[in-house]
Image (cartoon, rainbow, N blue to C red; front, side, top):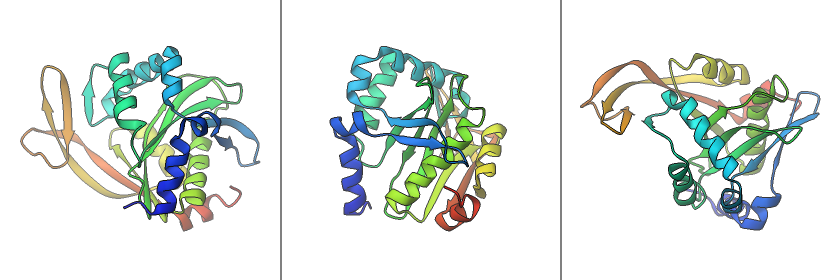
Length: 224
């Protein structure tokens, strides 16, 4: 359950004017800004087909690391944003920009509760910006989540064969706490991996749960 303060904050961010003005600075360990995070808004997707095209391209590039796998289209991306992401009261999708305003990826938070938030949809789709931009993006987003949403922990999930992403999260300070088997079901239009539906084929990789508490974050990153 969301408490009233968090609910109001998410509601405020998702109001159109707030969407256009709100951003989270991405800073390095010297507190120098190297980029920023900006929430996806209805106005943005209505007026910038290039953003929809990039989000669709990036999903296609990294589709193998999602539980549900399909052929991405701009129409499907737009529908997902309009009907699921933007109306949701417990989810925000951010765009990652480098310091020269180049759009290079996306990063989301979801399942926002009074004590916990989940990170999801981390993709670096384009080159550019600081070499450690994604590392500092994750830390800067965590800093905002812990300081503004006042949660005690942040979780995320990853396929066990997504070694590069797991290494990034571990470098930030996340620890693997659980591992689940996955079952795969295929149809003509999509592939779905599940931790609960055992009627499909057992996958040769698993689903990891990783976690970091607010106290662990403060110890690991005292300068943020």
